[in-house]
Image 1 (cartoon, rainbow, N blue to C red):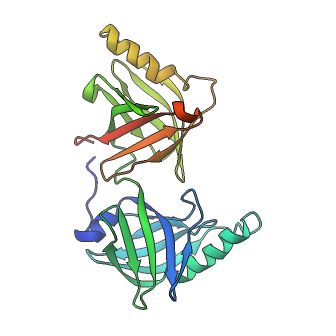
Image 2: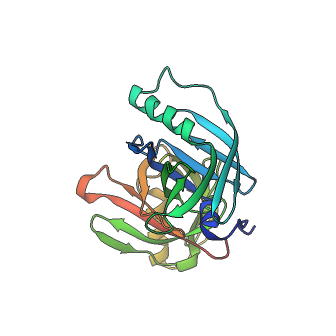
Image 3: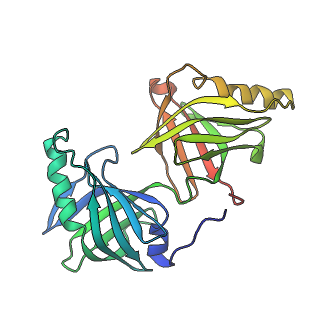
Amino acid sequence: MPTPTGPGGNGGLLVGARWYVQWISAGGQVTTAPPRAAAWLEFGYDDTTLGNYGCTPFEAATTVTETTLTVGRKTDEASTAGTCPKARLSFEEELRKLLSGPFTINQRVDDLTMDLKNRQGDFIAVKLIRPKGLFGSRWRLDHLVVGDSIGPVIGGREVYYVFHRNGTVTGKAGCNDFTGRAVFENDVLLMSRLTPTTRRTCSQELMDQEKGLLTVGLGDGEPPRRMYYNNVLTRSFQATDESQGLNYFGYNWVAMSDG
């Protein structure tokens, strides 16, 4: 299924992707958002935006054009005030008040960073955290990250992952199809239980690589591999397991044009 299209301009870049809030500026005072992408906005193609103020998830009716964002009625989920840190609650209240009325959409540095500015000059600074079309599309494994070096991946378009909103991942590891778990939470990807679903054979080199991709740290019965996804661009992203210190390990995926 092809990715839906939104408006052109900055609004078109905004729609279909998830953005985390970096800071807000109100009345000339800048407030930094809580860490680990706790506050975020995901602009849908159906004039609906999902988000989180920092502790509390919400849904909002929105209209996005090439240059403007209009926020209508917002519906908050159950309050988490009882378990939310005080500093995060303070930011949440500021963001909730600011996220109303019309905004202009301006690129701050490039198409990965945007400022949503209201008529008073207050603004919400956001940065891309999940690329457009993350779920349901094919993402080719371009290379592996091993410490400060890059590990090549053979097989080209035969090595790809398809992430699904329900927390599963399917794909092909070179020779065989596979399924597993891949849960995205804020800026963390938890991946586990990658299991082949076919029994094809191919070159020994490709089969050896496939065995590593499906079993090393990801086999059945092992805890999920916890990775921070970073280096996010409009058509690629990287997820890195930093638990091993300097010997960190990660994946770099690139969107495939055939989805």
